[in-house]
Length: 75
Image (cartoon, rainbow, N blue to C red; front, top):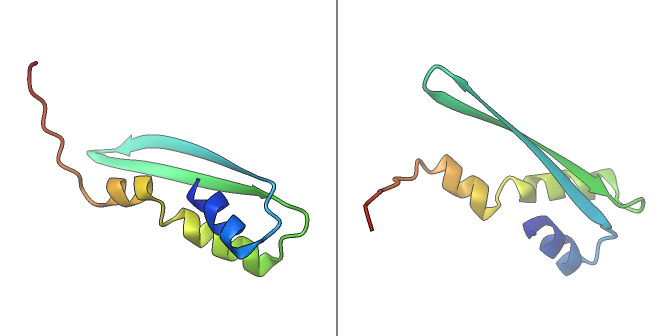
């Protein structure tokens, strides 16, 4: 959503964004791998690079990288 919004603001020819995410553990460490696939024949390499950088700043990624605290209680 963040990538599409940014491309629309810049009036770049982005047609579709696909994201694949994998997760595994190495010891206690969670490892996430994200692949961003940008569809838009008219996108330049510079635009593609910028959009991938924008994808790295999305709110979900920021939350995961920020060591969130999750509190659980009975309701």
